[in-house]
Length: 236
Image (cartoon, rainbow, N blue to C red; front, side, top):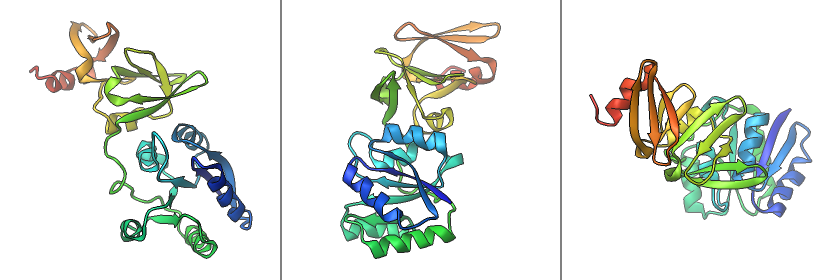
């Protein structure tokens, strides 16, 4: 059974794919999402073998969502696109699977047939963003899109990943690994990333150091990362 998640901001578009998949017993829809924030949570929780994702979605588009996924658990991706045939050629040349809206049933069947024989995750680095300009976050029952430039530091703890800005703390489904690789934040501790632009002071301690941010927050620095942090900031 190939477990899949459908991600599209249009309910009718999601239902169209569900109806098409109903004819194929070896595909199971385990979730459907109308935005990237919900999708990220569902992908991290269920780790599906396959996702159908719309490219053109508000706030966080399909390409940005792909860049936010943990590369260690990357599913097979089928893009849903309304792009013209010239843009689609770019996907064909890189061997990415796509479906053009409105979805043709014969084309859909060919895509599924290809997926049945090859479920190796694609290398999406050639088309997905290398840096994240915004982060999908949540605060209670509120979904928030946080600008990366506003983040002072990020902390990992038992409850998940917490994002701190001068405005309010929130949580994200992104992993520290993805955040470290795709944002300007740098590692200062096993559980912390910090924005160099947010640092106003570093106090050296016997156990390492402590950062003070622009908002007055205190962020620990372990000995392991202190030298690299000082070099990044221009201290020898």
